[in-house]
Image (cartoon, rainbow, N blue to C red; front, side, top):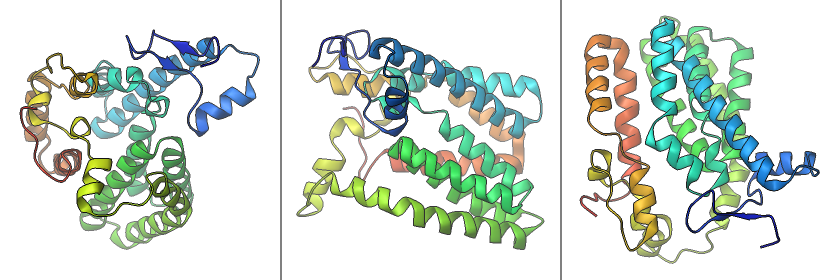
Length: 275
């Protein structure tokens, strides 16, 4: 690596080359060529942390309707092991995690005010999320589908809401399809399902249910330790989530379904326990 591009401050002890690897970082690197890469990386990391807390605070405000709920949401998410993992694992596109609560919050807002302007902005956010980080974009699209189904079924203004979500999903699909094809091509030709599993679902990339409640122990393969620690939630947060679902009643159904869908997708094509 060229001098000045490798640092062990991230992804310790292996380190990481700070050369931007995806569109948003590349934009800043090109726009600010006079800023040293280490400094630029640190500034972008801090900005991403700030926007992650801010957008989650805003999502909490939309959901709860009060500042205490907003501060709780923003704080709990910002100090979670998942955010720490996303910031230090060494994949710069994952630091744009703030796009996920932003997309989810805007979909909620569009369900309440289903105007064409809100629909257009929803499309822009989804395209931005997929372009900035395919994985975060995929999660945003999945959340949009779940929210759309709930809004169409339970909204008082079903016809308008249905039309707006159909517009959002149709236009987003057309714009995002080229990105999907490029992403697919990056893996090359896959001969069969077994090879697809090895390529797309290595053992460390699937959620092990034990990692949600127990911090992973050191492993000979650093990827197992890094990914496992990034999934740790402990016992307090699940208890708070159950309490919130119980107190929220019908309003909490969509979040329960979102959690279930996300967990099932994260586990991959088969169950992994105790790896």
